[in-house]
Length: 446
Image (cartoon, rainbow, N blue to C red; front, side, top):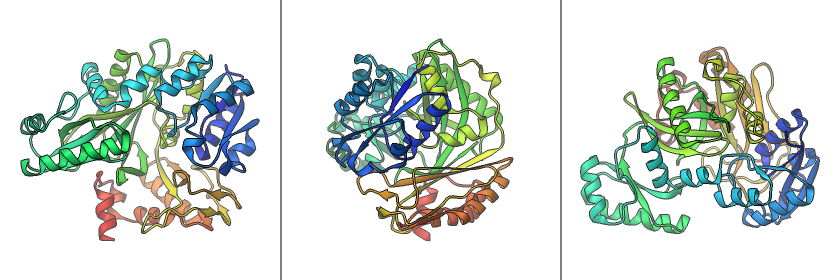
């Protein structure tokens, strides 16, 4: 096992990784920008290195500074967390070239799944079900028209290197196709430096279902069930739960087997999440995240497995030590992402936390680096905490969530806690009757 791990991230995920390392007897190195000098993950780590000024491109995205920090502190592995450089294949290669272990998949797999066109081809070859559409990039309007006629309108045009809804346009008819195709290419070029787009059938009201995978270096692959991430605003997840309120145990086993078989075929290793759209009883692959997910705690709650611990064990060359039949699911879990934003306008609200009182009690977990006096800088993602609750059933989980949200106090900055309080009282959410467009429609009406 590693002696010292450098955590190439910040905030709650850096603290989450530190805690797993500490419980395994592994020393930690925190890297931080000047804006995060007093952050909790910096205070608790065994060592800390400042890697640059506040802007992420000069600190948390500075590959050379991070590797230099690992070298001078003698770290034998780097955990990238999520975001920042976690899915940067060039960074993973640089880490390995310097004789340091990258706690994640191979650079080749990061590169394969980081490009949407390549990922779709790999998905088809490995047996994953995909949305009807183009087999690869669509390089001309004539080709776009041909794909659209074959798949059927409406169609979705997506940036190959995209994410977060950028470079994504819907064409509901041939009359809309030319403008949508051109606009998507322009947005893709501006956002990602790559104008390449591909197309697929636009699904009406699907749910977003994802499967958590663990794979070691010895050919062992298991799935840890699904997470339902359908409550989204502008393609950003707001609340996640496990298991999905709409899947049966048989459907879970079936899609899990499809996912694990695909991962064996491509020789994947470490943690990964395969994301699907689900509609009318059918699953359609959309992408794979080759990293730990923000919403991993709900899977931990229902399986009892520590995913970060498993990542560390796999990266150190250890076998999983269990098979699919050993994975059991218990109860229900829900995660609320708490952002430092105005709960009505969603305007970011950086500042100083004056009061902080997280909820507690049986089945309640809060992942956060907040404390009274903590600074919420304006330079990074606005998520400041994750509230995770677990109960024997979904109904009991909702009651626990309602109680926990009522106890949660974050003073000094606005937060989205009021939004989650509204959601938990909504009849549609209480019955699990929602899809990926439900939240935006709810917000528009409200």
